[in-house]
Image (cartoon, rainbow, N blue to C red; front, side):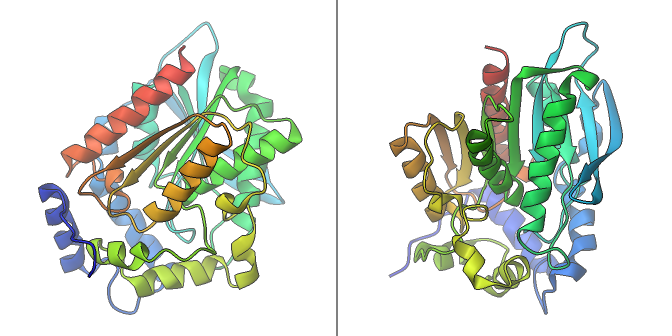
Length: 316
């Protein structure tokens, strides 16, 4: 017998609306889905309702490419401000600084910090490890230029949404092994942690949300056309040999997120390795619920909690 699914009432309506709209239905194609994702993401959370003091789009060199980033300032300041480097979600095949704009405005305002919202190259044109290696280069660039835009190198955090969260956490592993950049904390919203593992609950939780199993399979195949890469720590941080001495983590998941079983395992390994973890699993919710702030009270509450945790870490 499967696990009974009891969605939050607002969540249930949102899932039904996405199913009715056919957001992930039909003959799902990751590349064709990109413009759809760009269009509906701003509808989930009104970024125009979150003005910031200043923002600026820049180009960052990364592995022979020029990647776009957007920098947000919460206020004018004569002293350096803390910084959050944030990577967007989108199933490794979609997403941009525009789809993460609301998240970054929110963190900028609520955590009183500069935010760097950075792109990376997408699969299937750029399969693993291009995207994650892009984020490594962006993190190095950001660390080297923090002071130029008023950032405080002693208060540098990293975070992301879904794939961006996975990229953020593997950046902390790399930074530990290389001796930098120095991250004060990691903010992980709905990450994945293990492409290689088998989790029976995954199929059950997929049935609760708007993303069908066939769409998820196509996303994973686009990102990892070589199955052997599933065990690489850069896409499956749960399988990293050593998870000790990483910065404190705030990790947000949902009761019926198909990624939650592997995130549970990742949290357990982090804690067993001595890493401080604040782990919040929101009942009655599905994957990416936290982006639906214009529809869900639980999304607004979850993001307020995430921002409060970040603010406490950046303004001790």
